[in-house]
Length: 178
Image 1 (cartoon, one colour):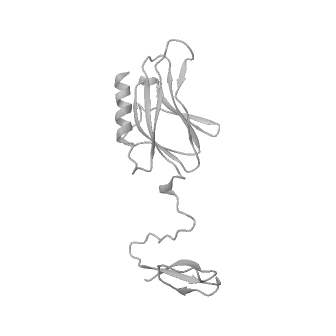
Image 2 (cartoon, rainbow, N blue to C red; image 1 turned 135 degrees about the vertical axis):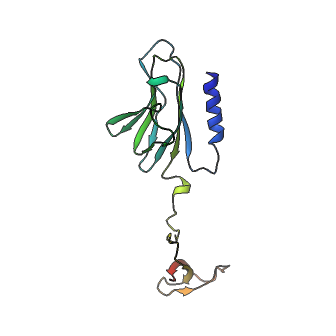
Image 3 (cartoon, rainbow, N blue to C red; image 1 turned 120 degrees about the vertical axis):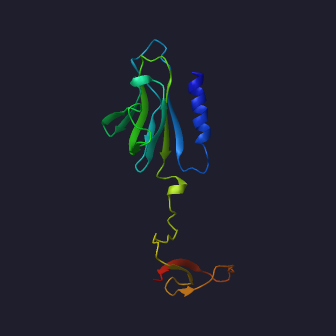
C-alpha cells in the first residue's frame, strides 16, 4: 500500500503543473477486504463530447485490472497490462470511464489518465477573437477600424478614445497580403 501511495504522490507532483491543459485523474480500486462483490470499481469519470482521455500509467491489480470504457450502451475493457504504454491509448468522449478489477487481488490498483477537456480555456477561442490562419508562407495585415453608424468604417489606431461620441464601434479585419 505504501508503494501505491508513493506512486500516486509522484504522479500527482509530476503532472500537476498549471501550464498543462490536461487534468490528471487517479482511478484507484481499493484492496479487497474479503467480503462483497467479485468485481470492484473505482469512481467514474465522464468525458463530454470533444474530451479526450489518455492512459498514462497503471500499477497493481495483476492481470485482473482493466479500464472499463462505456460509449452509449456499449462497454469495452482496455487491459493496461497488455497495452504498450509508449502508444498511450486515447479515448474520445462522450464516454464514461472507470477502473475495474477482480476481487481475487488483495492489493490496490491504480490507473492514471490525462484528460483534456474540450471546453477548457486553453482549447476555446472566444467568439469575438480574430484568428490568423495557419499558413507558413502567408503574410497578413491586421486592421482596426471604427464606425459611428456600423455602415461606414474608417481605419483607426489603438489608443485612448473619449466618451464624447454617443456610439463608437470597433472591428478588426485580417487581409492576406500575398
